Each structure stands twice: as structure tokens, then as C-alpha cells.
Length: 99
Image 1 (tube, rainbow, N blue to C red):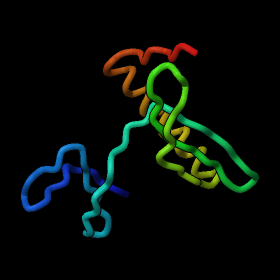
Image 2 (image 1 turned 120 degrees about the vertical axis):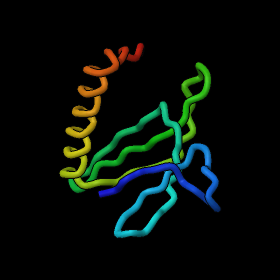
Image 3 (image 1 turned 60 degrees about the vertical axis):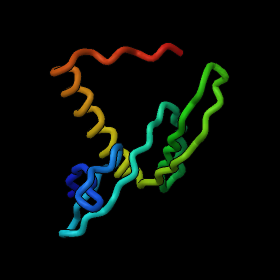
């Protein structure tokens, strides 16, 4: 299990970064914004591309690809559903995306 907390470098917080700790080791984790997603699958894996779309052109810059087993994809789906349900019960409905 990972626990995330603000990254400190020389006792100074680095804006926009978090660290993960696993087995007593602290690792820097890069945060990236994403408003564009591409999905694909094969018999053995699911692929999720994350990117950033700019303007109305529909063009996006894909910056990260996550590859996982179908079992992990199903776990991610369940975890996201739980988080959205918690979000909506405490903060309010998430608006639907147009188009």
C-alpha cells in the first residue's frame, strides 16, 4: 500500500509533487494533469493513455500509458466508482461531460 504526502527536498515543500512511501523508502511521484483518455484492450491487458487536450481542436498530447491486467482494470473500475460515489455524497454531483 502507498501513502502519499507532500515531498520535501532539503526540508522545503516542492509544489505539485507528492512522495509515496513503501517499505520505509520514500519515492517522488510526479503529478500530471489529464483531461484526455484513450482506452484499448487485448486478450491479456488493458491500456489507458492519459493526455492533455488544448483548445477546441480536439488534438491532445498523450503523456502517459498505463498497462494492466484485466483483473487490475476491474479493480481500478471498482475503486474509481467508490471514489466518485464518496465524492458525490460529500461534495455534490459531478457534472456530465458534453460530447
